[in-house]
Image (cartoon, rainbow, N blue to C red):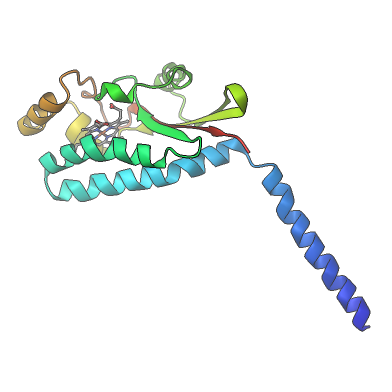
Length: 179
Ligand code: HEC
């Protein structure tokens, strides 16, 4: 009786170990990419919302300095990520070639993320970003004069205005070594 119980327990432990190992061996790269982007998106949104409470000048300055810093701090261990667009505000956010290839599809209405195989066992993942009401203050059609002025000062080549709610604004992208 006692031995049987021990055998049953041993089997449960072994089975539990197996069921854990199988999904790990089959990690879906799209899920991996989506998970890598979560802290980037969360931190950016937090910075944007809190800095907007301190005023628009402050918010623009924060986007200018914080956004590239957050992407850089999360781009470690072979992971590289960023934000980009077909209409750039900051030319330093230019998309890698494999990302830029997808802009046309997104402009034509595709709204799903994209997961692609790159060279050398690397993987790419893209999530589209749609324009929300909050974004119009700095990317919309009628900017307040002080916003327009501040943007012109920081971004003389700014192309990222004139968007309407629901428009494709750009992408989050990440590149990594697939497991
Ligand atoms: C307070 C002004 C402000 C608001 C509000 C704002 N942005 Fe931006 N956005 C900026 C600035 C400034 C940059 C340039 C950041 C940099 O230098 O990397 C930028 C850059 C971007 C980029 C990177 C590509 C590029 O054009 O350089 C994307 C994508 C973007 N914004 C999307 C959004 C979305 C989506 C929202 C709404 C959720 C939003 N922004 C709200 C000011 C703003």
